[in-house]
Amino acid sequence: MTDNDYYEIVRQKLTYGPYAADKHEKTYELLKIFWNEEDIEILTHFPNIGKTISIKKLIEKTGKSKSHIKKILKNAAEKKTITRVGNKYGFIPLFPGLLEVYVWARKDTKENLKNAAKIFRYMFTNPFAFQTKEVLEKRAEGYEDMNLTPILPYEAKDRLIEINESVNVQSRVLPYETLKNVIDKNDKFAVVTCPCRLVGELSGEPCSKATSEMGCFIIGIAAQLFVELGWGRPLNREEALEYLKKTEEAGLVHNLPSNSPEILGFCNCCSCHCGLLHPTKEFGIKNVNPSNFTPIHNQERCALCKNCIKICPMEAISQQNGKIIVNYDLCLGCGVCAINCPENAIKMQKVRNKPRSVKNVKEEEKIFDRLVGGLMS
Image 1 (spheres, helix red, strand yellow):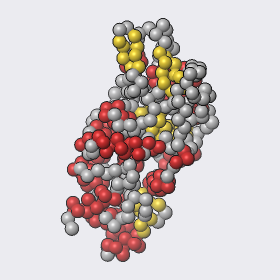
Image 2 (cartoon, helix red, strand yellow):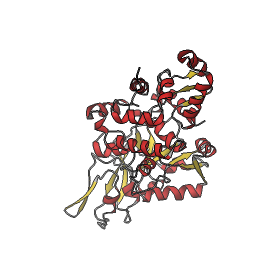
Image 3 (cartoon, helix red, strand yellow):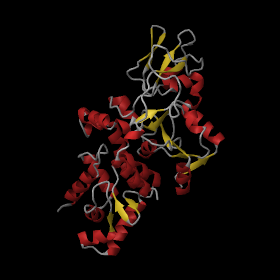
């Protein structure tokens, strides 16, 4: 069996539901950065994602010595290219999963990190090189519960308007719909480097809106865990609020995983580098679900400063015949335009009651969370 055959076996095992390792030359290049010929021969005996294997079982399957296998697994686990759960080892998907922990850990060589980042960046900006639009859309639609959904900025409550009686929705704001509701119930916070913008920086294509240090926001027990791992920077409440204000001024979208049974954190996304928001904007792949809100523009208050046009992450706002126009087919209801309007001419109106699908968390997602937890241990 050739090395290429080994890499193909592993590639197939890295495909897990919507988390696909597509058959493409760039995928093989990435796998060869993560694992050399000795590594990949051992890893072909790993089970598919969702299951783990012991060193004892690997000795039986490969005929290799215990010291040889332990050395390979230790090196791969330190680089976070495999996960360790107790005394067993397993795979996790390329993205999300391996991308984040691999660049967070930064335990590989600078050359490998740079080359891996270039490939991840290529994957984000050229999705149709890996799959057809139809396949990618079907993936996003089939796993809608696992996509991202914006939550409104911290001070958005001052930018809300009463519900129009003709709209059949609840007027009350639900706990997960605005950032203020999430933050006010916690006292531990941390910031974790944004893996998507870090990939841009490592590959030589940095984001113009924000650096990778303006990254993901972690809350509660999860924040404490990330700090203890050395991956998170702790913030007190005052620092947290100041940090969030900066992300909102930069035009970043607070995106929450749609199916999280508990809010432990959220991404602060730009549409130029985010692995989910960028394909949504550039290629119409619905990786990000709209919020329950939509912007309503008051033309009389508007000073035509065009700030909303410049800052909208989806380029859903334009000026036509001296008026601000919102393309609601593109709008995600993130509230970035409203919070950055100096004249308070944009307010957010609740237009739907779509709940978060926390009841629909599948068993496979629980397995995925457990394996990612092993990477963080």
